[in-house]
Image (cartoon, rainbow, N blue to C red):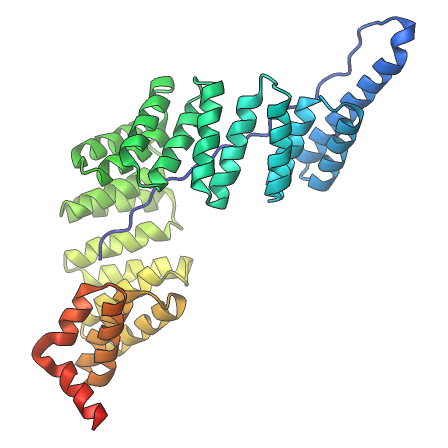
Length: 367
C-alpha cells in the first residue's frame, strides 16, 4: 500500500476590524441628529466586535444588524457580520453580506471576494472558490495568501502546474512562506519532480523547523524512493513535535514493515489506533503485519473492523481473503477477493483466478 500523502489545506480567515474610538470632532448644531446616529452606529459596531471576540456570536450579529439598520453603507458592519455568519456555518447569509460589500464598491472588496472563496472552498464547491479567489487577486494582487489559497484549490482540482504557479506567486511576495513551500513540494511530487519536491520540503523546514506536516511529507517521498531508513527518521521527527500525529505513526509503521521490523510496525499501528480508533488504514496495515507473522485470526479481525468503518475498502477485502485462505476458509477467501476485484484492486482478481481454486469453489457451491 502506498504511503499516505498529507497535504496542507490551510485557509486564513481573520476577523477584519477592531473597535474604534467614538468620533470627537465638533460639528454645527444643526447636524446633531446625524452625528448622534453616527455615534450610535459606531457604538453598536464596537459592541459587536467585542461580542465576537468573546464568542457571543448571536449578540455580535444583532449589533452589526443594528448598525446596518442605521447606516446601510457601513461596510465594516457587513464585513464583520458576514465573518460572524461564516463562523456559525450560515454560509448563505455570510455570502449575502460579502456581496453587499462588493456592491458598495469599497476598497476592501478584495477581502469580501476572498472570504467568499474561502466559504465555497469549505463547502467543496471548488469551481466557485476558484472564481472568487481569482476576483480577490484581480482587486489586490500583492497578498500572498490569496495566491496560496488559489493554489490549494488548483491542487484539489489536480491542476498541479497551475498550483505550482500560484505557490510561486505567493513565494514571490513572501519568500519565507513555509506552507506555500510545503504545498508546492506536494504539487511537484505529483507532477513527477521528486528532487524539486524534496528541496521544497527541506527549505520549508529550514524556515520553520516545527512544521510537522513537512516532516511527514518528506518521510512519504523518501518512502516512495525506497529510502525507508530516511523515511523513518522524518516520521519520527514529526511524531517528536506532535505526539498525537496518528498519520505519522501509521506511515512509520509502513516503513518499519518494509524493513521487516514487524513488531515495531505493529507498535506504531497500535499508537495510531489509540489516537484514532476509526482509522481504517492502520487496521488494514496492522492486518498485513499479522499475516506476515502468521497471526491470521488477528488479521481477519482487523480487516473485519476496517471494512465496518469503510465498506468500500478494497485492500481490506484483499488482505482478509489472504488470511481466510490460510485458515482454510476458501469460500470466504474467494468471496473477499471477488469483492476486492470489483472495487478496482487488480490483485484481488489475480488471487481469485490463481490456480483455478475459486472456480472450483463456485462449482462446488452450485452442486
